[in-house]
Length: 431
Image (cartoon, rainbow, N blue to C red; front, side):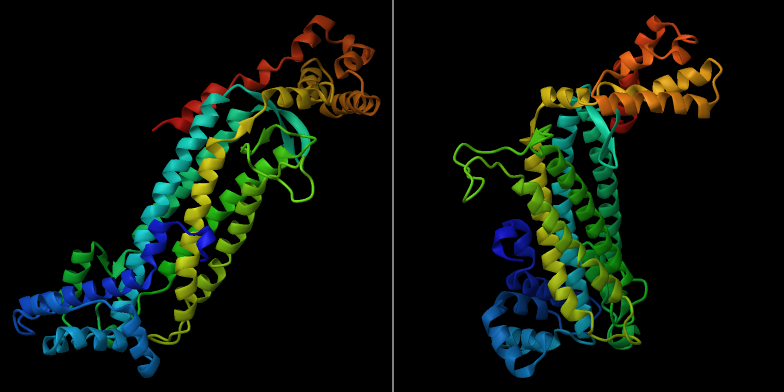
């Protein structure tokens, strides 16, 4: 991922220095276990740990010749650690190191992403509570439907990201496995006790059965979860983009005093952050299909998944970390305009109360079809003429012959649409 969309903490997980350091930890942990099992001489690990140095540049130089990353790594370690390094990797295969490292990197990245989601949840919750009863129009198909509150709108995103948090926790658990089982996963040349020791040392679970590689359905779940989270980010971003349109302007991204919106038009204040998030979501989701396709490998292993994972591992997690952080700040600093929300509510002259009239007519004896026809005509007339829906209703004898005007007036009440808001908040915010 390019630096523009990379944050330091998660980026460092995917840098060569950290990757090679994890490889060394895996090799040394395996060697420690071998010492305990008296498979290799005692004291090997102590000597290797004291002398071994991670030199990414040297490793890449060797790899350029031998065309094998693990061999290049072991050769580089041996150059510094000396003859004791020959006991490293005993009975192991490359995938034991590569897959265990990759899963640990995904776990480390996932834990950062969990922190990001927690921060985002705080930002959303604060806005939801603040605007619990801030009236705005609910829209379906982009068309005015019935009144809701802006707090309720925020609460839907809060719940969605709570679900995403749970999905990510499950996916981190799923990916947190270790395999040290040797060629084709039979443990023919490496004791299963070594795998258990390494897993415990790295705080991973033992992979119950590996086919020389850790099964890629685990990774498919992890990247699918990342894709879902990206889609949730995009849904939120699109909502903000729509609400910031000039003719709507119910919310607006924070715009700094020295900020510029357009190189040509000085008046512009564009929703660039939410547009950026929409684009990042597309990028992140692009990792899902390759991850799913990586599940189907030849026999006990092939490396068709390798190049894919070297790209999507860092790119998807780094981009998601950036996107979650950006969304959290966007929500935290979002400008909300209740007056514009009220103005937009009034645009249709009250026709969104149509369902209340419909239900009341059915209650006093009209069939649903009769009620719908009467209410729809009055609503369409009011909309076409830009006139009061209430006035249309009280002028219709079909209606006033059955329902007194004073009762009809009570049906045009915003509090009717907010009377259950407390219940929704209570069940959504309960621990």
